[in-house]
Length: 183
Image (cartoon, rainbow, N blue to C red; front, side, top):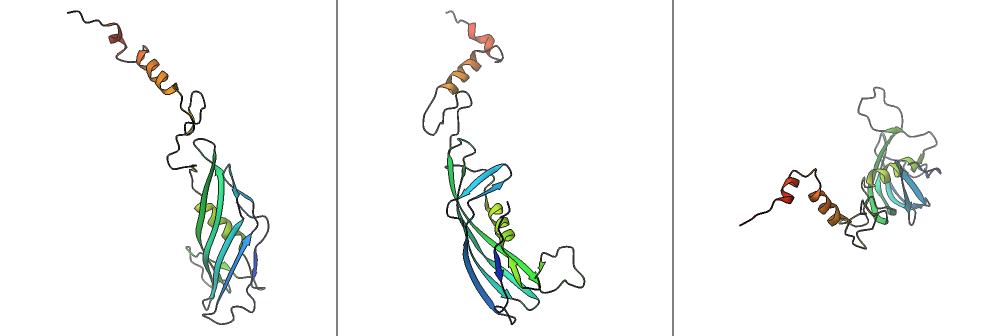
């Protein structure tokens, strides 16, 4: 998922000295996003509350991303609602290090000191989206035979399937079904 519109934050004139902090909050009017082949709706967009901190050699971005999300239940196909409350953290160096390490996790702050939050916000939302989306923790799903939503109605397909399995010749005890006990 990537937002199509940038979320630009201008840091110029806000973080001049080491130790300076600047809090920024806002809402991104995104209505949908995708994770793999699943599509989700953001009911009220995506809100963020972040703090930029001048660390001496760069700027640390930390904060929270929140959203109310609607997707499709993986078991019964009804709408499923969940909340995203994810932490966001990024580090921006003022200049490229002389000897970068293998595990460095940073970006270089552009000369205009404008940071685009679109990618970090998008990453936070994707990371907090559940792999399996359920309308309720104990969702019963759909009947594999007749397609009935077992959360709202019952069917006798499972009982009939079990009876058929017991009576079938594939059952190792099928030979016993014609056994009679005479006293």
